[in-house]
Image 1 (cartoon, rainbow, N blue to C red):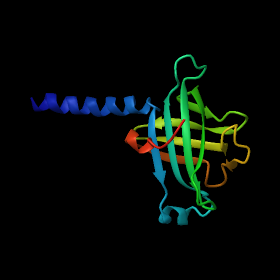
Image 2: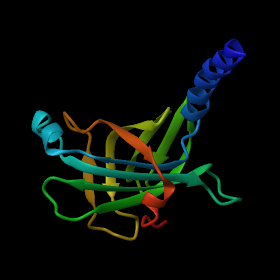
Image 3: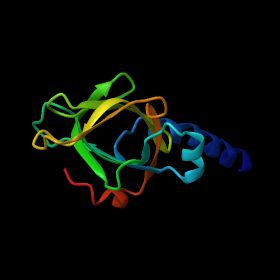
Length: 155
């Protein structure tokens, strides 16, 4: 009986990360503390909130995303949104009107978000802020959290 229980636990531990790694949907948040930012003085981004959900039926893309960020030099939350499609083992998420985008690679318990450049505004807003992946703003580990924590993000 103990051997069966042990086997089930091992198999469950092996299967669960694989299933979680394949799921890019959900709410992901990272708030960088002062200790982290002190070690990364070139990192502009201080907070990230990312929501990825299935696109409504009939859309030419698979997913929609909404992204909120705070940066050191602004005291406001910057927002943008767009669409995502599968690319390799992750997602490529783009902001319309040549607003750049992010790549997202799901992992167990978090996603890795890769930034080249993204405009933190939508097509309707002309004065958006562009964030480029500088020395310390290219790769972000963003942790999966309860979906209710992204409830304030609007599409």
